[in-house]
Image (cartoon, rainbow, N blue to C red; front, side):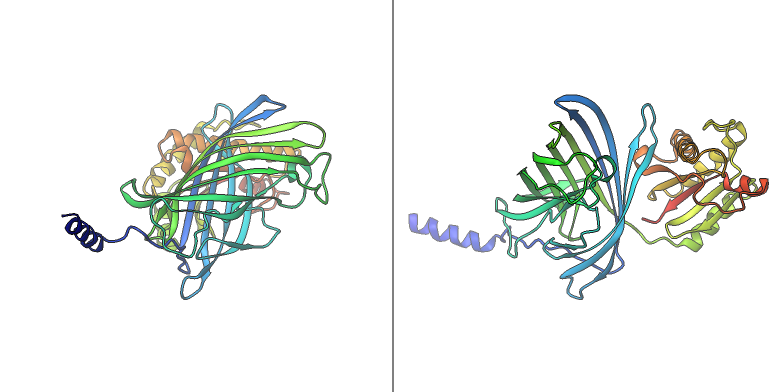
Length: 398
């Protein structure tokens, strides 16, 4: 009986397919993706809570080139960081980075030292073998931080680590058949001083990151992740700064935009609206409201503009899968800092109005201010200044 049971077990094992599978990134030239990430972070200075922040990251990138066998892909795109103002639903872009890098089929990067983004690199990295649920492995990675604005460190600040991985197994998420991989790493390093800094620099960095990575085997890409992190920086002046929080993100594959068709549709829809025009741009299709009226020296929309925005909100609702960027521009008047701030505040006011009208939720629309840096007309004439006082609402391709 024991021998018969053993033979039956062998037969059943041969009939049941192995759960082991190969994890590799897939690259197709021309593919475009965007990642929408949200971080809730508390910042402690000298062990006292200083402030909490909700930070949004919008990453739009594409496969610029790829090997015929998909063994590597050349990726390029834009990484934008935005924050919500106190008491506001609008996300205002605070930083924008361009990046270009090559990544192989296992996830390892080849990237120039001049690029600040992505922050976390070589995560995930997969071994060159089939993986079954429960399998573990390790691989080196690194973070690259931007310490220019606050600490005057000019180069991307490299923090290496060794990541530990485990393939947990198949999971269902948002109706998709995915694979769950967990990744974690701890950091403890006492780095050398950077080549340049303003006044202080890190003398010790310690912390951890724990991540859940949801992998789509059909796309050959991670489509979502969740993270818990805590990092403490000890600085050369004896102070400490701790960053503690959680993050989550989703990756979306972008569909190509027929710009000519979309421009024609939107142009027809805005007919009759004064000072409103529609143009194609490298980012998508832009609705421009020139000579937009606010109360004097403020970001309070004049009543005459509210009907325009209601019509435009209805137009935007027809394209729910596209993110929206609202850019504020001013004429050349007053001080540069004041113009920059006013353009941001006016873009934020338009975003809040569009959110209130149901055009988008806060995670899919953002604001940016350009001050007077991008004029479209002569600032020496009143007519030109009126044209330069504008808000541009772009339906983004990616």
